[in-house]
Image (cartoon, rainbow, N blue to C red; front, side, top):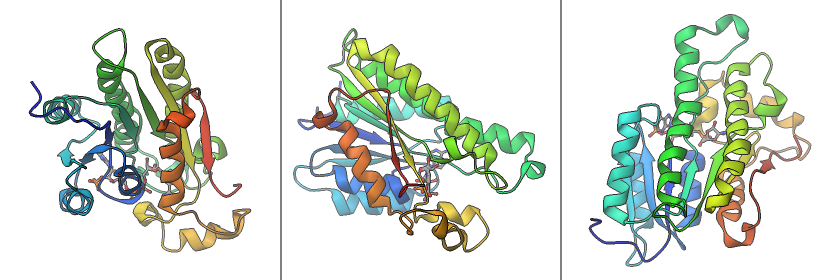
Length: 252
Ligand code: NAP
């Protein structure tokens, strides 16, 4: 039995410790109780939790490597035990998986990339949907997958492998949206373009400055720009929206 079932809807954000995930948490705290998943950045997740917790907003950091099925099961069980309900999953956790052209790609690099960006999102979607679907014990819900414009641009010379993993995530979004619509679960995607975050530390220095002129709006996006799209997709204003994508990429 849950220790105390939340009165407010509950959102679980994977990779909620930093960057885009932390921005989504900041934007969601007015309306949701939050599960902030983290992998390596426990201190950062705890700082966000302390910042956002109020008398009405419950926030709990929860560790799990989303690529590890046992850890994912443990996290969802702990979230259920703590909050008693789940309304929104944001599959935000992601890695670049190495930088460079095809020659640099290795088997272990690819396996880890798929494991985090694709397997992790599948496992979390499965656990979330099992709790949300109206033909079981749930009352419906919403899943947003944080993909990338790379899925359609391809990222030649830099991150084709990463782009391909996000292409898989987009296909998952399309399929699960159709599979889960009859049981009250909406599934959508957000495709960020060039966004200022630590993600670019995985590339040679100056990547954001180098690519800025290729963005029609001539600027990199902010983590808040991405969070705003995610928050709209999970809101009741998007109640008839499923299986679609919002590109947050300044026209890129
Ligand atoms: P970031 O600053 O590098 O943050 C990555 C987040 O993912 C961290 O919270 C990290 O958690 C988490 N994470 C990584 N591996 C994990 C794992 N195995 N299990 C659980 N969590 C894991 O990057 P970001 O820019 O915020 O990226 C967030 C998402 O947006 C990613 O899916 C990324 O592909 C996508 N995206 C980013 C951009 C961009 O330009 N920034 C563009 C397109 C798409 P810990 O720190 O706790 O390990």
